[in-house]
Image (tube, rainbow, N blue to C red):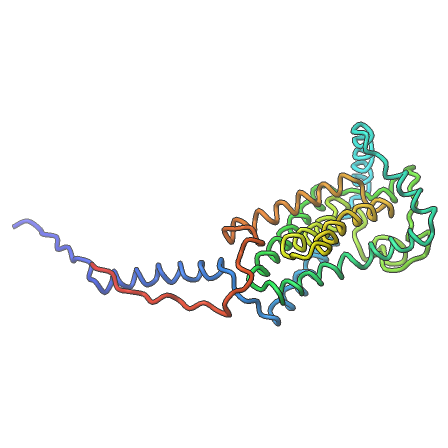
Length: 286
């Protein structure tokens, strides 16, 4: 007699186990990609750890001074060819008005953090369903900026050799900027491209514009990144092209958020349930 092979049909119990495992994996992914009410303790911890990590990585990028100065010279020449090289004119003009440039120095040193945190708090309280998607856009924007700091070290205009720009923090002895004065050794001075002052202020401005219905508040939302652009140029901390780099990083951040959540953050529901329950798993027929 020849050998015979006995094939055991897959029983309904085994098929059901596979179905349960597949649906549980789907449920976990679905929950991660669904808007949920944020938890305060988790968000505070996440933002603190994320900013500490960002600062650590940014400052750990080698300060490639020679390459950064060469890149700055290239940007300056490129802007002359494009007819937009007016940073030096703006820097000297604003520096001649003492009260204005001192105000801009403090603006540069403080509002970058204060306004961003303020918008995050506002989202947390008033738009909990959109908070996670907006936060992801901000985090992705900041994350891709780190790649720019590594691949394209760039000296700010105030550090250019023979650039004749005024370092307004040193001249007017204002505090707060970690890129000039006594605190300059605590920050990578050659990480000017892209400008996260622009990336973050654009995120704040667009978020406010998209989610508030009060006309004058919406106008303020748009004015904030515009004012930030003037400040970063007037204080000789960035070129115009650094600002374009920051805007491109923000576009990447919103793209990541759109792909993850399936919609742009401002189109998601304003409110979200405190939690989501896993759907009941029904046995499938064998």
